Image 1 (cartoon, rainbow, N blue to C red):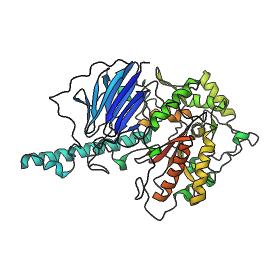
Image 2 (tube, one colour):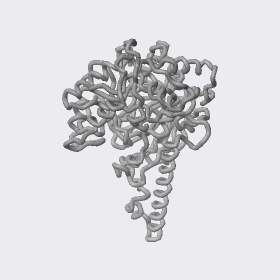
Image 3 (cartoon, helix red, strand yellow):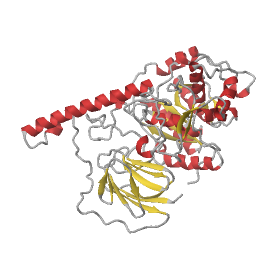
Image 4 (tube, rainbow, N blue to C red):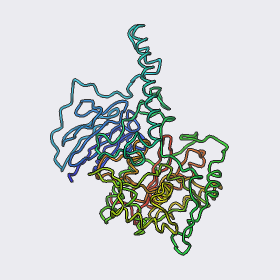
Length: 502
């Protein structure tokens, strides 16, 4: 694999970054590299690998991404050694491949540099129409803006209907396409908020109230777990749906004070910003180097359960509870690969035999692969798995929170397969984007979990973040703060207890 180095000159300093797989640059998380340039959008530009090529794509940013002076949009563009990217107000990125520093393209005089904050009008805001030269143009702009709003709203409603119904027909896994995965068609183009979203000056905001996310688990759909008490690793899995529901009520009970994504008084430690994604990918590469194989589908998750590479997390304890698995489907189990796409697993095949073996004794319970509800229960339980080192890390955070506030923490994501991660790309704006073979979603490692936060006050959120920052400084984990509708903390633990070699 060719070595790609990004030489970045930003207002907050000069740095070099070696690109491992994919890097999103912006002014705030969830961008993998956060730069101190006020002209950047939250997620501005993504540079990624595909096969043996290096590509760049603009993330619908306000001030744009300029490749050798030409503003780019739409499909990704190939990068070559010596290419210069200009983003934000004054950030320049020079690309170096395999140590070859080709002569950079000359600065493009005919193209104006991106402004500090582009005054791009929002089509549905009346102020946009005020820029028209006369009254007739004003009316036309208002009409066009209204039409755009209707089209976008209708498209979003259609997306929600399709996502909740599991797709538009044909073979699908949790709504994911069965066609082979291609970088150009995998990630749906984000919809710009015609009303400006929560920040009217930032047109790359999504319509927060219309974002879709992984469906949360309905406690009524969770069968009581009655695991084999003789199995030491399964002894604490005996959780009733009633206890799970009680923990949920306690967690979400009304607070005194403002809650939400950005409550007044929110103080995010520096440890939860910055190069977290870069560090996580470095560790994932090390993990793969030790022989760990990312699970591509639920059959491969089942294999890891049988081999005890991953263990099952209890649905609820005194200090935390899970709401993972809500998007699990009842359909037949399918296999997935980037070469052949998605195919139903046929009886008698090796993957079917793996599923049969687990179904015969899944922690003391038996499941029928021909029963749709049983298949869903198996998927829910497979999404509850984790690396053994993750449990004490979660317990340390959860126990501290319980002691302080008397409530359990709300865990919203654990382990995922690659096909399940891809299905979330279509509905979850915050989910790690799979751009093709070689992608490293942290949740496929079994070393990542998410904690919901928008139901908490600023005091609660600040307490949890201070604890996470403390544990990050102790090299126990890497934590990132995520915004959007499914606001959470993304936590990644080191499978061997050792931070990545950067």
